[in-house]
Length: 487
Image (spheres, rainbow, N blue to C red):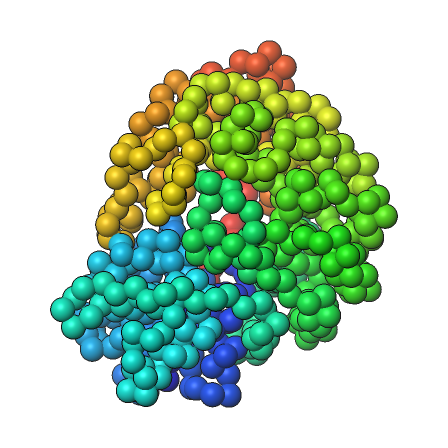
């Protein structure tokens, strides 16, 4: 038996299908005995895994790992299992070990790392563990040799979603993953591509999943969503692709096919690509249920966008705000503030630009992050080399300092002064109070009215300092929200 583990990464109300391990399960289906263990629906994954190992012949424990809370959960699970079953091979895959490969292998409880796309690598690793092939010939695999040295095999060429079978939805408790959201009462998730062809220098997707975006065929996207609607009652979907839209013809074909399903949906898109689409295409997307689109605006400064190698302009972002307003699609703009070359100027210009976007399209949702560098990338803008020493093990990454860094709560980067960081944080509190996100479906009307009332004078006068009353109000509202059901 192969055990596939999805460590807990979020709150119960936010859980969605564990797509990463389900993709691996798809290639095991009908070929290997396997079990999916998901920390989002299993109160004690360690006990579940231990019982499976005790009663079954388990050959491999495969764990998907994202940076942040899921990495910490994976560390705790694997450390416990290694103590209970020291001879069981453990492999990590996913974004964290693909980017921080040596740090993952430095853990005593990690024997192998699958970098990037894992379907074929996993199958070949199983064969190697059975003595049917050598480890050094498996592309995309990193491992420890008999002397404990790290070995990194060549990269594996990525394949598009159509190269592999569907996720086996029947092998997980599907009802527990269809959760209420702003988009519907039974929101599901889907991933319709892999990779990204763009060169944004602050992003680690290239290193993990390649520089080509390989798209799922519109026919397959329709078929999977139809299955989720028919079999499980899904009424909305969040597409977890870096860029759901690429070619205009592809976007229109997807829209044409899924329109009859009556789903409301959210996705991510590039500012420049969206602006190239005709009004007819945008109308088709709206008819097909497109409700909100996440755009990486990243900065309100063209000089920063150039250093980021983002290949967009602030003028294009303004055009997106205007066009989404025209077609009734909510834009969700994210910004990465605190450029290491000149963080004060970057912050000042970006906050002003955000105010401009809200004036153009008041429905614009604003997401603010502190700039945090990604290791193992060359050509990072701002000359950060030597200024940040990254952790060398999961235990270090799990510390409060680096967890805050990963989550961009308090990255504590040497170029960002406390004054500038406070300005960014305080502005975020004020703007999110002035326009509370529509995606928080638990927030009652009175709470939105309270926050808007308390923050309106601050936003109007641009006085962002010490917004203690807004933080207290947000805490009060959080305490007054209805409790969620337990796992």
